Image (tube, rainbow, N blue to C red; front, side, top):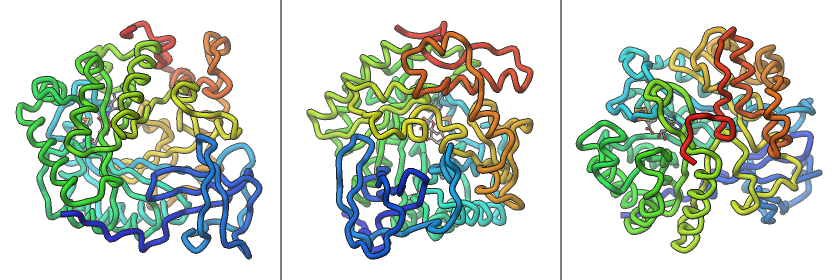
Length: 423
Ligand SMILES: C[S@@+](CC[C@H](N)C(=O)[O-])C[C@H]1O[C@@H](n2cnc3c(N)ncnc32)[C@H](O)[C@@H]1O
Ligand code: SF4
């Protein structure tokens, strides 16, 4: 049965930035920009350009405006657009590339009720447009509903990333009622490959059952499938997209595996630049043919490639493209601690503060560590890279942070430089 309570709540969340209004469309999960528009007063329609430069008209009555009278920083966004919350570390699967790594075994690392409330309030007061709840497996976290409801009440678009193996359908229904988006991780339509990747002999059946439940109980605009491309699945990803289309999925994100946690300890071969680009081109083309929206998700700026359909003409690439660290993203751990990056996460030398005592806005605008990341130096190889202007070393913040932290690690975690890649 189709269930949706529609978009009775305001559909667009808008906030001021020095370059204009930054608007998030909850329905289409897209960010729009209105250059030169600083107020909604006296206007009943606004015209926005999205990342592709396409224009759309928005009824002002549908827009919730945040921060109308604040001083705004010029060189970086007023606050993060996106926050990731890790309320639980425990997981019932062990994906061989999982960046959370050994922290998954920490069974008692769960967010308390007080921290969940403070997290949601901090996110609300700082105008964060979208928030994702991850982990570990969020459906093993027993305050998931409370956290999601608090976030929803704080006017941020909430999504939950799940492996889809915990069949708590009552909880799913409660989340559906508050318009939560579901990112279901599913890496292959071939059962043996999916089960091998997640190290769970019944993982495939469980996750497919969850996808079918969601398709029967919420609108497809709230369902996205996340695939992490890796050595076991990347050649068959087009067939996985076909399978997903056949069961009714119309939105797929393909992630470039980041080098952290198990992907490092398992010595995972990540896709190099050319293998990634070829795979993405084919996946996007199959998606177009079938009507499935296929997106590329990387810490790197490959998705600004013209053939992948993105434009850098809006002059906002510094904010919206490349790695999010210091530019648009923050990370909150189960204990309320706030970090700038998912690399070295959670490392207390990079601790920015805690939701119980610190405001996200204050951290974002004044943190010495974030400032360091924003001005990080880069290895000389990167300066010759044709993506440098947009990337600014992107993942090299990791490289630079390794100097900051006194590590000897010199691999910049970028496929252009990585030595252990599939080409
Ligand atoms: C760490 S998981 C936690 C939430 C949940 N357990 C799940 O699997 O969706 C969050 C997302 O990160 C993805 N992921 C895990 N390891 C990754 C890596 N090394 N690089 C990129 N994405 C990764 C997962 O597939 C999932 O989509
Ligand atoms: S990716 Fe998700 S399901 Fe897989 S081990 Fe990590 S937390 Fe668990």
